[in-house]
Amino acid sequence: MSVLKNGVPKYVRVYSNEGRKDETLDCITVVFGKKRVNGEFMYIGASKTGSGFYQHGFSDTQIDRPSYGHLGKKIRFEDLDPGLQERIRDEYCEIWDC
Image 1: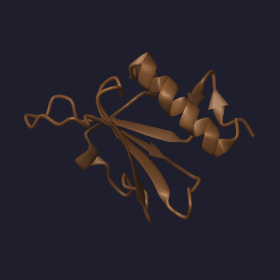
Image 2: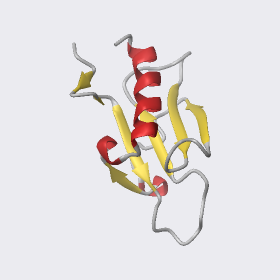
Image 3: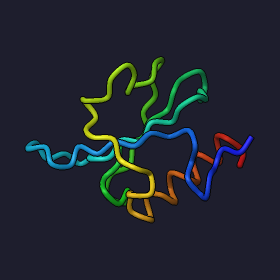
Image 4: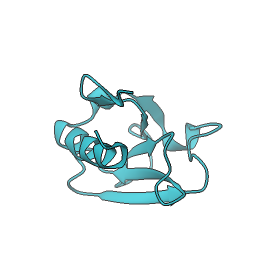
């Protein structure tokens, strides 16, 4: 089973709260789906580039299910800053052994 398609992680969902009036450091949220880490689902809050703010979070449930409106708008992984893409891909591959 391939968990990367053309370098894009198959089991992540990405959200941006850009455009909201309330400025936040963690404008990007990346939700890791399907696989639990130490029994919990992982997500990452990050700044646009991931170099200013980058923090892991864990939850018993997927934080974007059943709705994700509180996270912002859904965006494509490919729309992330290349440096942030690389960080996310590295962590994803560590979890998925790719």
